[in-house]
Image (cartoon, rainbow, N blue to C red; front, side):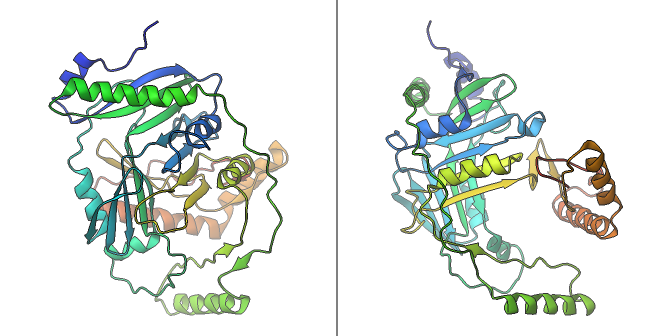
Length: 387
């Protein structure tokens, strides 16, 4: 049976009137694969992606809309990194295409502005774009704040990869969508053939047998180290309380970084995290071979229950979470803990404050009078905790 690619070349000719980026895809059954196995086949040792950038975005707790899809990205044709106002635009293989100086967010907007995705049915909301992270220090391009933090990690303030080639797991329909984004050119037939070739290249890797990674116990190793001494941290707490009492601030987040050396494989750490703390937003970002990244490869691994912000069809959505209780050992204990969380004055006050902050943030970028709070103080339960 001949492979079926959607949309067809004739349909692409029509879609080219609506945009210049068109996702082409082929559908495969997903009953013999998992997001982890697909990632290892596409990005493990000996894969065609080699030491290039890649990502895995998972929703381990399924059943809700937010948990329907998982995404694997490979063969990124472009990367964007920023150290302060120094922005590096890279190509596949780590070559530097261009270097710019300026607001990193504005430069990303300028780079993405020419891309006009055409709507294609049957695909999830995300079927191409940029994936990566924005560091906290980028706030200084939006607010006037002093730069007092020590620069000791030497990681970029921003790192993004262009996801033009990806595999999407549809956990509801048990299918894989292998996607290659086509850029509309004068030779549309040639561009379509190139997209099909990229799809088949990915499928060829998927058909290879999976070489199981070497079983690796995470070593106990050395103790965790904080970037503060206990006395330094306690002094920060006292200073914060004084600022609050003086009315200078009403909230502050005091944090510390815990670190230790390890020889454990980064993806093994991610696999352990996804089993220990399954959450709606799991991510493994691998920035190997990215221009402007520095000598040491960077991987970002995380698990979160909280959607920070989503922009869809002209509407921005925030979903603040505050307050935590462990899950109960029985239904009765679980219900009692949920009632205790809802009745806690401190937790309620913090949640009200976060909702007000969210409304204020949305109000700064939204039409006047359009900000609403459809749900207030609903308990959400996850594998280990409730918020």
